[in-house]
Each structure stands twice: as C-alpha cells, then as structure tokens.
Image (cartoon, rainbow, N blue to C red):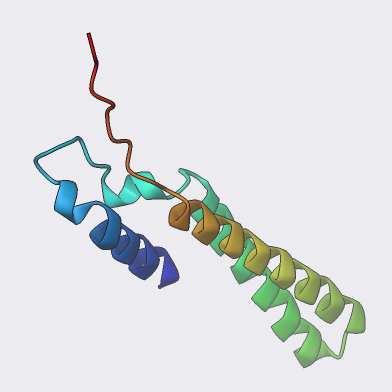
Length: 96
C-alpha cells in the first residue's frame, strides 16, 4: 500500500502545481522499475518461510525467513527514499 500512497503524496506536493508549465513525471516514474516486484516477492517468500518454520517447529526456517523479511523492509525503505528524493527538473532560462 505504501507503493501507492507515498508516490501520490510526493507527486501531489511537488508536481501538481507545475502541471502545464513543465513536463511532470507520471506516478509510475517516481518508483524504480523492477524494485517493487522484487521486494514484494522477497516479502512473500519470507512470510512463507516464517509460517512454515512456526508450523513445523524449524528454527532455521524462521531465522532465514526473518533475515529475508529484514532485507525486504530495507528494500522498501530504499525505494521510498528514492521517491521522496525525486525533485522536479525546472528548466533554467537561457540568458543570451
């Protein structure tokens, strides 16, 4: 859900007033292309490992799943920082 809300809020705050003045990015342009799908897959695999580890009382599965879950959230954080740091490219007028 954060992949929908955060880009919209950033776009609305930074780019909505520039519509018609400069070329503004689309919402999908604010996020990396393949990153969110990789992060979602990693998140799903980690949850499956954790749940199966709990069900079968496998400590190693729980630990690996928890490690993958942490990596998944780190990827989410990096992607959201990428969105937040996206600034409008305002053309500099040519003096000549």
